Each structure stands twice: as structure tokens, then as C-alpha cells.
Image (cartoon, rainbow, N blue to C red):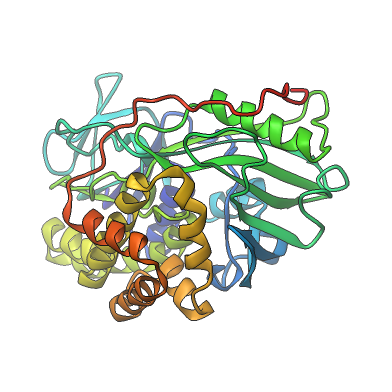
Length: 404
């Protein structure tokens, strides 16, 4: 086998399909290869790959955000039809050998051990196993900074007090949930078919804000706006780390969320994975004749070029600044961010190779910031990681939450 991809999520499936199209003998390993994908995936419309069929887009909407005031983001948001995306990528797996099993690790180059005691071998192995990263050595580390969210799906008529058709609410930092403590925001995205996802989100916290808190806040927020959650409404639960170190398995390539390609300011990674899959596959195909080491090195250079490594570091500094920020100042920070020129916001939220543009955007943010925010940004860049939060959020509005 030339390439074995561990993990059959969107990133792993896209990469296995790209390798197979280039004639590489490719395998795809997952404990349950045919399991449905249940998360909601979105990206900015300009990021949608050109070869992605229109049928994979469930809805498009104009993006807006509310910090202290309302802002139009200036570009469109695309929400994917996840079952259609799954079918589209799975249909491209012709010739790829599907293996069912759970990877435990890679004891040596080109070897994967499975939970049933068997082994699989390939010239190059790829860890696309998401947050679990089964092929990544696990050194001792502190508590991770997680993004967590709890959401419900309602009809667009029911969601009308908060969002209108053709509208995607990227962030709403108003404290309509009636609680103090760690800041959270409402995310509202159309899912197509007249349905809307309303989700209470903790952008980042170490450790992640418990889902029970987010559920309570969402119920209270929706009740305040007169939005009733129907009996049996579909719910969505989200939890993933934002500060995982870069995958350093010496004998494997990290890809997708396992790389990690997750943007710590948004939690997005699918667009980056879909765009990177073809060039990573091309690098593997071009350099495998020189040997596995050359192929791995070439693929890593695609995923983690020097500009990508620098921008990843910039983003991690921004994450640590957010984690240290007093709760009451978070909306003001995002008010400053959303006041940046559109080009700067776009560069920070999407670019992986524009170091100069990212630095200019961050410099512009610094110039717009008040003295307190400036001092906070500077100190966060030189201090060690923010410690884990130990205090619980405190309710300041005793009104009972809306129906579950």
C-alpha cells in the first residue's frame, strides 16, 4: 500500500480520494467507515472549492455579527448539506480499500497497530483522526482550551426574532442569556429546507465550558426573545480543542483537525482540509518514488509551510489573549475586530500563507485598540499559556429557562 489514511471524516475521506485519483494504492481506516457525519459544517462562500457540486451547499446567507453594535461582515456564508458532502466524497473513493478497525498507534514507520491486535502497513501513513489523533505521541500537557457549543434546530419562522431568511448570525455577544461569568455568543445559521440552527457557543475556554451551562443559557436566551424550542427538536453538541500542538508524529502526517488545521478564532477547518487534500496527494505521488521520507517531507511542507507555521503562531497568541481577557471586555474586543477594514478581517479569518497580510491586520487591530486592550495583547504575547479556569459561571437572572 502506498498511502494509508486513518480517519474517515471529511478531511481523511477527501485526502484518500485525492490519493486514489492519482493512482496511489490507498487505504482508508476507520472504526465505522460508513457512519453518518452529524456536525454542521460551514465555510465562507469564497472558500468553497471550485469542484464542489452546488448540491452540497444547503444554504447561503449574508454574514453579520453583533458585538457592542451590529456589523455586516461583507461576505457570504455557505452551510454544507453534510449528507450530500459525505456522498460526494465517498463516491470518489473508487479503488480505495476501506478498512474497518481502530488504530492504536504507529510503533514504527509505515506500521499501524489496530485494537484487534492486527497490523496494517503502508509506505506513508496519515493521521486524520480528528481530536483523538491516534498516531500522535501524547506527551504530558495541561488542560486543553476547547470550543464548546449546544444548539437546537428550529423552523425559520420560529427563529425570526433572532435571524431572518438569507441571514447568518456569525456571533451575537449580547448577554441575553442573563448570566455573568465566561462569555458566550449565539450562532445562528440556516440549514436549508426552512430550518435554522441556533447555538450557544463558548469560543474558547480552558477547560471547555460545560455543555449543561450552554444549554441553560441557550434556553434562557431563546425564551427572552420568545423563541420556543419544539418538543423533540434536534440538538447539536460541540466540543473540540483549539490549542493542540502541531502533529509531530515522526512517521506519519497529521491532516485535517489532527494537523491541526482548526482556526482558533472560528473553529473552522473543513475548507482548509478540502483545499489542501489535492496538493498534499500530489506531493505524496510526486515524491514516493524517492522514498517514504521524501514523500512525508514534501507533504508536510504543503500542510505546514513556513508562512503557515508563522500564521499558526500568530493565531495561538490571539487565542491566549482571548483566554486571559476579562469577560466583560470580550464584546469590546470583538467590536474592535469587526471594525477592521473588510480585507483585514478576511485575511485574519482565512489566510494560511499571507504572513504580511496577517501582520498588517493585527497591527491595524492594535492601532484601533484602547490602552487597556493594547497592554493585554502585548502581555499575552510574552506570557505563558493562560491557566485553567476554576470558577463556575454565576447566574444574575433568575428567570426560569424556556422549554427543553
